[in-house]
Image 1 (tube, rainbow, N blue to C red):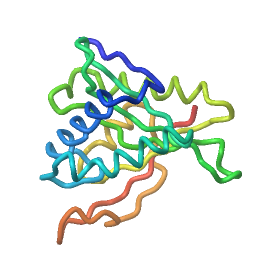
Image 2: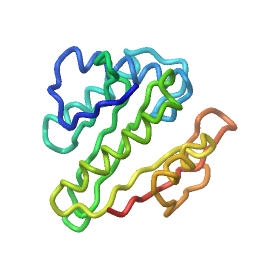
Image 3: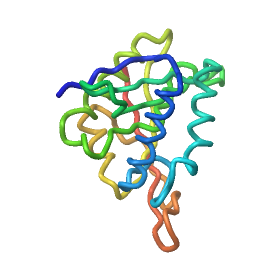
Image 4: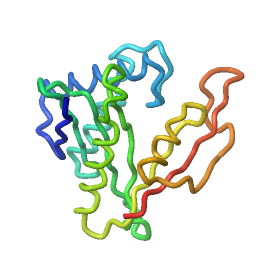
Amino acid sequence: MALTCELDPLIDDELTDGILALWTDVSNAGGAVGFVPPVTGEDIRPDLDRSLAAVRAGERRLLVGRDEEGQVVATAFLAYNSHRLMTHWIWLYTVMVHPGRQGKGYGRSLLAAVEEAARGFHGVEAIRLTCRGGTGVDLFYATCGYKEVGRIPAAIRVAPGDDRDDIVMLLTL
């Protein structure tokens, strides 16, 4: 089962609904994408609407991964820096692979597509992301070439008494 990735897809209702369903499923499976379960699509919709508005405004790019049936099963948002001294690197946000599709190489395929896309962006030399400690996702990013370059202890409060590190990672292109 292959993942087909597309940069800058047409944002229509079908795509929006697919991303919303993915984000909800990933969040409810414990994925570190801005929410703590349980959540509904309506909890997530404002964040999705802001992300898609940034894509429409040209501040972010959207990379969507679809399975062989055309279902949205992976996403990543790539954000440009607006500060003139930091335009040589981009942010990577909301990297998601559907929980039922994890372990099939989709995450690696998605990150390879992110890297390929970023290499095509004029003047971009690196990709920067942050991830929640205690999930193991930092180890996955490391296997894809990202290096930990910073860590803020206990910066993310998942629940009272459950604080996690905010890990900064970088991939030099």
